[in-house]
Length: 67
Image 1 (tube, one colour):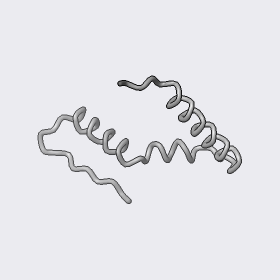
Image 2 (cartoon, helix red, strand yellow; image 1 turned 120 degrees about the vertical axis):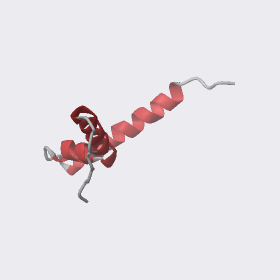
Image 3 (tube, one colour; image 1 turned 45 degrees about the vertical axis):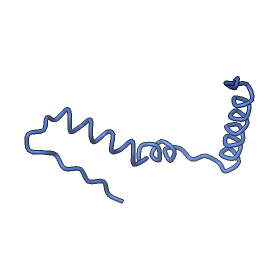
């Protein structure tokens, strides 16, 4: 999916660049590029996902609940 952004007639370059960066961030392209930069073995990806899941459980268990 190509990204398109119109730059308005009297818009400053800095503002247009800021809008473009936000557009990239929202689209998830930068995240995908970082992910694909290096090959990751499937077993390493599963291991990382499992560690992320365990840390979320641990964090939820340790946070105090409000009455």
